[in-house]
Length: 259
Length: 281
Image (cartoon, rainbow over all chains, first blue to last red; front, side, top):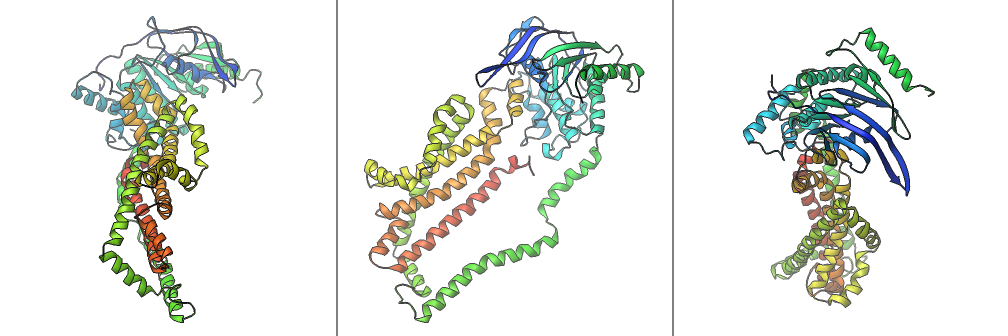
């Protein structure tokens, strides 16, 4: 087991959350009255059409944006700035191109007050965990898209966050790599049981990984429905229950929309 | 271990080798290009020599190349030419360093602060439309005809393009790179030294190079008007005393220095941005 310390998990509570952007002096409602509780160690997927504010929701939970009304709390503490207990992964791996994989992962620990030896060990453990052993000294341009995203996952996990936020993390990958990384995410999540919230465009992915799937509506972004996926992990992709739920979510998403 | 890591491993080790040894067939056209580059100056010199020998023009107008060479040797050995050169290059580097410092500071400030951008950038865009040489009369009236006015002119010619390059360099940093730094609570100073500086460096260095070339031209132009030494002044003195040989030597040296500065800076640029180029290579 490369990752010895059990990751702490957390309960996230979102209540009547609304968010407006002001564009050309006109207020644009991005999120309206979002209520969502995410339990300890739960995997929640969020799907919805473009413009439903799902990425904004993640940015608010991450603390990257803090101008909102309503409340967002993690373990009872109000969120209004980034904190090391919330990690984030973007669609673009966003590795710094002048740093090696190892340096990129270690960069996440710059502000952590732990001994250097311990830092080095954690970095190598995480690189191992995401399957990049042997690529510690590679530069990002030498990695494939899937490998770069693995490095990004290692960087997000190395500071041992309680909550991991994933903003379309596999959206830019080819179909096969995507399936493999879905399994990897599931494996990592099962190993650490941290809370994960993932925004995705891929309904299949949302249903396969999520304990619950949140379906959002656009303009203004709001929750349309939350679908439970009552199946144990790791899951079987061929499961008829999974397919039935996927079809239902798809139907709900495309309801009233001409494709 | 999946998503094709085995294939990629070979690619990783293969990459440096491929960079060091370009495939053989590429060499020939490269050699031909070199030849073409040397050919045009040679043709120019030969044509010039033939023209001066033809007797169609007086030797004061079409100075024979050997006369140019003698003048060059004379002025070099009597110390006048080296004095002019050190005078010009001293001003160039002095003004350039001041201008680059101001440019980098202002440009970066505009890049990181929306407020600084709002206040300073419009002024920059207006100044940019104004050729530096157009400021020479005004600057002479303000700063006199001493060394200051030349330093100020070079600094001004440098600061503007450098500031704009620094600004664009910072503005062009992908948002998620900064998000990653914020998510991991990287202290502001480390964010600056480890993300903002290396990420904006390639654009900045390009701006620094353009600025150096531009400053050199501005300086020589300024020396034509206000100086008691320098390459520009040497040419102006040659004009007043009807010494076309002296003027032409000035022209050639000005060109050579501009060329050398640019080549030298390109070499420096390759070294400086080696790390950052890894992203697009």
